[in-house]
Amino acid sequence: MAKSTLVEQAEQLPYDNHLQEFLPFLKQERGFADVTIVNRQRSLKPFLTWLVGRCIPLSAVSPVLITKYFTGAVAASGSGLASRSIYSLNCERRSA
Image (cartoon, rainbow, N blue to C red):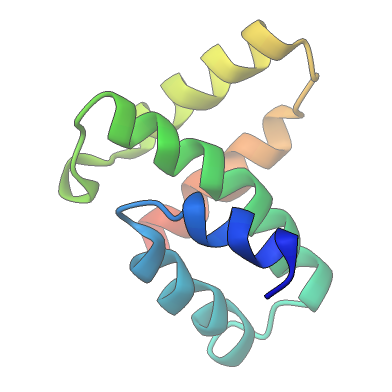
């Protein structure tokens, strides 16, 4: 087994099963491009880790909580995540 596969298995999140169901949904039902799905996964994994670290269940996730996460993550990292990206993720959550 490759080293990267072992690392991925060790880093599985409690919500990983939900993420693995959501990503194909984006492709099959929403018609998202592969690169968009990869970017969503890259955004969602740290978010799900943040939820787990604060004992927040998925059922409690709201647009306000998502905005709070991304606002705090952007401020902490200095990454400059565009407000459009935050809006896009909020809109997806509301329409799902």
